[in-house]
Length: 329
Ligand code: UDP
Ligand code: MG
Image (cartoon, rainbow, N blue to C red; front, side, top):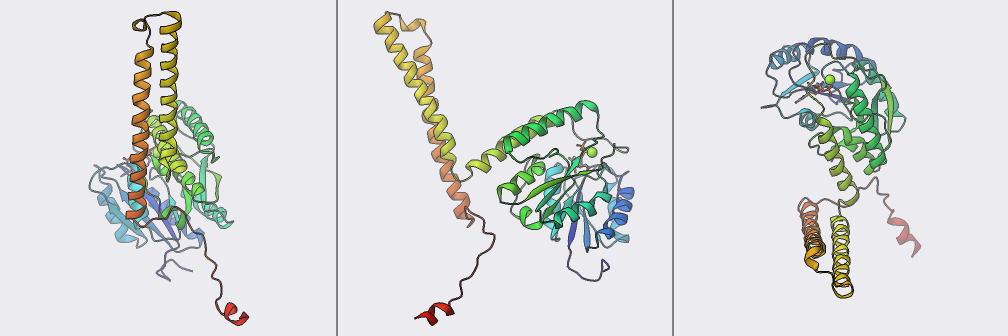
């Protein structure tokens, strides 16, 4: 089975690139060596995320010589997740494999990921078991992974590894924002997909420089909050806002009662206590929370109904043959 034999693509490899001119040719060589081993018709989608170096020119040269390579040049630098999203939108394969373009991920791992996927999984996530980044970062990432695993209930060792294999179905409806490409396994689980991981090779970056520092941890944590919220309360935001609002109002009443007690039984002057202020503030917060919940409910309806989306996902519908029922009468 040669790659050009059929036009249908079975595997799309998606790679975000920002100022990776020095890595492009070795990357292409590594892919050209590894991908035929999968035995699938593949395409390589290289997304140039507004690089300021010669990435665009080198990509054009590589693509001219290799018909499996499809460069996409973004207008400016949108960030890794957006670049991956652009690649996903253009990918045609039944299986999609994103990986980093700095050669930290090893294309030789792709066949193993696909073999694992064949066992009946929807996502196979790479686990950089022997991670080759500086110590501080590796430790921070380990802590972050623990937290994500605990909060999301989807147990993986390494969410941040870009190298993963997805079945097209699980990625199709997913829109990625911020740093969210790492949370696709959580989305997939949420949609009823089967998720697993295998250890993959990880190498130090030898050419170019990393685009991230420690501040990424904050972005990741906020994204986790959003994903978690969407996952649990996607269709019923009032449950969250309503609960917080009600709690706040309960605190307000307790504060009010305590104030009355102090005033009439202890004879304390209320000016001396923070209670009236506390009571008023928590009452206001409570009311605003509940109103925000109602507003969010409106947004949910607009979101689902304007796009004709359903609040469920169907795996399969078994059609009941109609002929039988007429025979029976
Ligand atoms: N990347 C990108 N746009 C950006 C930042 C990074 O497309 O704005 C790409 C980068 O070229 C690389 C991958 O995303 O292929 C991972 O980036 P990096 O190596 O800087 O991240 P790290 O490995 O340090 O987490
Ligand atoms: Mg890197």
